[in-house]
Length: 342
Image (cartoon, rainbow, N blue to C red; front, side, top):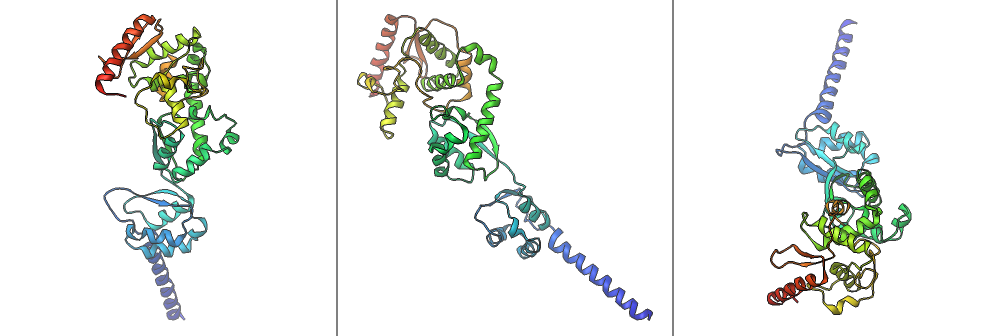
């Protein structure tokens, strides 16, 4: 009796050792190849287990062992789309669990210098899973206005230039939701400045978009902002060339404008600040936070006029009187004509 029992126990032990070895070799043995750095693997919403296993083939030392464990743990029924980090030497068990639980690595998305919603959609699509058309259709469609109870004119002001972390498969709606949250944080830190300005958020953003379109020099932005605030307070039309260009591009998006002429100033658009008093209905571009801060911290001076300064490219010549402004303007026009800027 003892010998058969011993043989039986030996077989059970051997089987246990074998199973432990198989489990180790399939589940716990390092399997992600070492390429010297972390690899990132993307699972699209339409991917199934077969497609994922096929695309993982070149990243794994033993692709077949991954398939065995993935099927055993029914990964196909709980596969989560996203961007996943595959560290060198990662085992199948960690990899399968990561894909099942949707433990993603976020992407860093930088928004900057977007002229309009189309440009914003392109920047978002560069690093996120939805393509630019999907983003643009949502940003320009009616659904977004209902989802967030905002107006079409207000919408561009909720997107602030900065670098953010998003999950790769963030939907357009979730993207906008996050931007609204970031906007609230931004303005929460500036509430006292906003109260002192006498303007509301939308007015500050709209004015900031004009300031940024007028000058690319951060050091000059507070002075430009102060000039436009002076004009607003005196009920003088802003007469900003970039607003005219914006109005022209609304009529013809493909038009290229290098210089605004007198004939362009009569275009009938609420964005034409030569024709209509006050601020336009909304921003003419998506402003950088520095431009917004320039408006909130506008320089206190008595300038009413400005024009490009040919002696300091990129900067402006400021004036308190129309006489001095006309002198500055003539100087600029002569320079522009000599440079062939038409």
